[in-house]
Structures are given as structure tokens and as C-alpha cells.
Image (cartoon, rainbow, N blue to C red; front, top):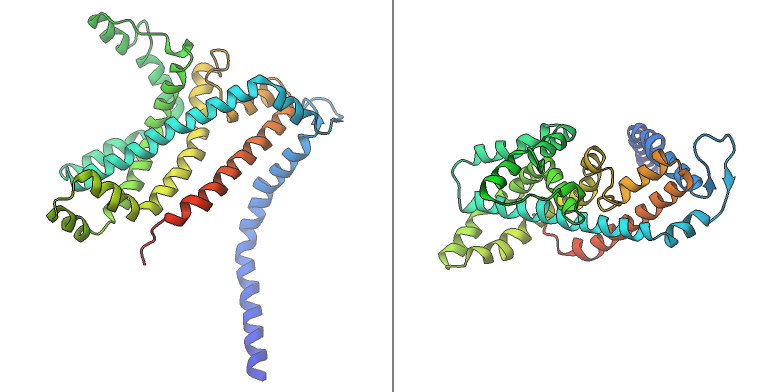
Length: 302
């Protein structure tokens, strides 16, 4: 009986110590995550411009106006297009490149890793201005080369459809290196014996990639998949702000930039808060779907 009581006291003491270590992190989350979230939900039911001393309660009117506004659906379509392009450039492309450098071209791995990772340490503002000069349709290097070849370069920042692709490329320039290094680590962690056995059996390289490397490095792949969606949309805010400001005619805007535009440019704080909550709910739904259907097929060693 005394041993049980001593054991329960020890567990209780260890539990309190554990909560003591967790408490600072919980306080940081409460101040910088939970409070802003609850306050955003609160503001979404009010009409306020951040200047008036009194907030006017409007109930669900902000949400109703949000779903009635055609701009909402245009912005969401742009957001999905950004996600598709970023996943292709920052998730699929690094995977293929990491496989090639790991099992096909093994020389110069250090050079390639350094070259691809270097843009990750450069400010995205600097990168946006650099690409704005490179892709200048009149005096940029690309325009000069195109003029020499007799080709006309379109004004990409004023062309709907093309502007999203170029902004995604600028963001990829910043994000690609980090994703490549992480995926490269996951791919090189695949046992070499399995790859050699497949090669002895004359298994084609594309089957080795899809049937062996991709499943056995899927834990890393899912991490990059999620981070590409979350961080990619955050990073792409910078080139939009620096170069297009959402134009032409909101063709380059996305959900995150539109929330900023409504809140801090037009001062529609309640409407912007409602838009932010709807965007967060959509991302939560995507995350639940990912954990429900994708996480089941993840391979974790040991």
C-alpha cells in the first residue's frame, strides 16, 4: 500500500514538472496564437475600421457579404492555382531532382546542394526586385535576348494567368533549396541494398522511384507537401506586395494577400476577419483530409 502511494506521488510530481516545462510554450501560444485567433473571430461579427472607438455589431453580415462577393471566388481560384503550381515546383520537382542526384548522377552533390540552397538565405524582397529587373519587358536581360531572337516578351505583370506563374517561380527561387535539402535527406535514407537489388533485376528507374523511393521516403514527402502549401502561400505574399499589389484586376491576389488588402489598405476589418476565418477553416479541412487519406500510407522506418 505504501509503495503504491509513493508511486502515485512520484507520478504526480513528475506530471507537475512536465507541465512546468510545457507552461512557457503554452503561454507563448496563448499570447501570439490563441488570443489573435479568438479576437479575429470576435472582430468578424463587427463593422469596424480600426479608427472608430465603437464597433458596430453586424452578426453574420460579413460572412454573407463575403460569399456574395464575386471577388471571393476569384481570389480562392487564384489561391488554388498558386497551391497547384507551388506543389509542382517545390514538392514534385525537388523530389525528382533529389532522386537523380542520389541514384543517377552522384558526382558534384556538394556543389548542387550549395547552389540550390543559396537563394534560401537571400531576402525575398531582394529576389523580387531582382526578378523584376531580369524580366523587365523593355530593358531586362530576358527582353534583350528575346529581341535578339526576334521574339516579343509580354508584360507579364499585366497579363492575367501569366502573372501567377511568374510570381510562383519567384517564390520557388526562395523555397526550392530548403525543400530540396530536406527531401534529399529523406531520399538518401532509403536503403541502398533495396535499390541495388532492383537494379540487378533490371527494374526501370521510374519504377524504382515510384515503387521504392517515393513510398520509403513518404514521411519526409508529406512534411514537405504540407510546408509547401502553408509556407508557399505565406512567401508569395512578398512578391505580390512588391511587384503587382494584387493586379492586374486582382488576377494575382490570393486569400492571404486579400485579407491584408481588406484589413490594412481598405480598413474593412470585420470583413477581413471573416475572410481570414473562412480561409483558416478551408485549410483545416484540407489538413483533415490529408491526415485521413494520405497519412495512412506513410512509411515510418522501425
